[in-house]
Length: 395
Ligand code: FAD
Ligand code: UDP
Image 1 (cartoon, protein in one colour):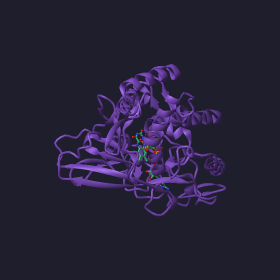
Image 2: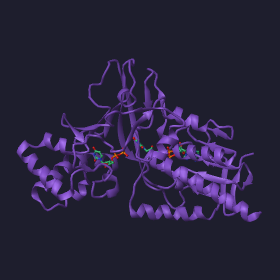
Image 3: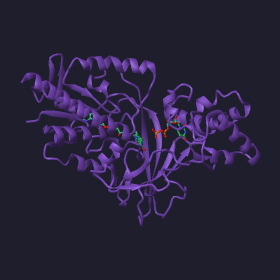
Image 4: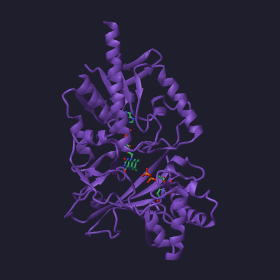
């Protein structure tokens, strides 16, 4: 009945299913264990009619024209005119993050700021991006003092909360996502397109899956329908020869037999307030030197909703994922040891030629939405192409 099975209805699974169904004429079944599609991008109206992001604030941002135009087939956008802007709350004082030349001038007196700005431009070039860990290595004592300020006031406490580890202990790729900007740019991302789908992410993915060749089964764990053996993949008791695209956690596909892959999880604490505005002045405020939560998001500003009945906010409390029921693995912890464990599972998966791994969980990577959509588009093309080649060989 089906010739492809996609496990997980997040961004990766939805794009792959759509492409296989539309370009390849494949009859695709998507199996999703949660009660909804969209994966971690899922959004919904809360009981007060405010569109909230169930799994933390999601801002679509990209420079990849192909990705923007692909997604634009399924949604219109609320694009942010001045980009997504975030501030850090440092004991009640709000400063722009990423740290940039505006932030420098808020923190330093004019004379010092002028001198440091010149030094930063001479060292790295106007408009450049430098990670805090790189900046710390600069031998100039004035630049080092700035690096130390950024490290202590923006990165140290936030990173300890988010990862349970210091910035030195985590992958430089992670802190490098929020570099110091040698420019007067207050935007959190420097991408050309920044915003949210006009009717929400869930509606965008629902439009994507709205295709005659696609069947979606939510509230269904793939482990209950599929068995992996040395001889192949079995679906509802029969050997399945079609492509199986897996987007969930790879260790869980193999019952964690070599040990669990470590992840960070989050608890989201939503609050609704019977007032027009939470008065934090920004859609997202990062708490970088205090509190147990990392950030507060006020949704009406993130999703550009007007005339709402009150306002809804969410606080994010990180913790170590244990695999307990109802916990969700959100962030892979990138380090050589975990990568080696991942590879053990990956080698097992390679033994089954019709099993394919894609997605933030299945690849144990730190993908943004645009990066995974891009990957999924190219992955589906390659899969259809290799199939065509096989058919041609058999003719
Ligand atoms: P997922 O969304 O995790 O989808 C995988 C799906 O597979 C899930 O729905 C899961 O339930 C399902 N699944 C797993 N195992 C099984 C099984 N055994 N059977 C059936 N189904 C299964 N990106 C941005 O670009 N901008 C942002 O602002 C942004 N903010 C983020 C904030 C947070 C808190 C987090 C955690 C991520 C954020 N991201 C953001 C990243 C974004 O969420 C991911 O890039 C995207 O969701 C990845 O899609 P995916 O399909 O790979 O994974
Ligand atoms: N980070 C920080 N302080 C901030 C913002 C980010 O220390 O105010 C660090 C932290 O380690 C975080 C990483 O930079 O995990 C990447 O931040 P990003 O906002 O990209 O994280 P995400 O949105 O993926 O949670």
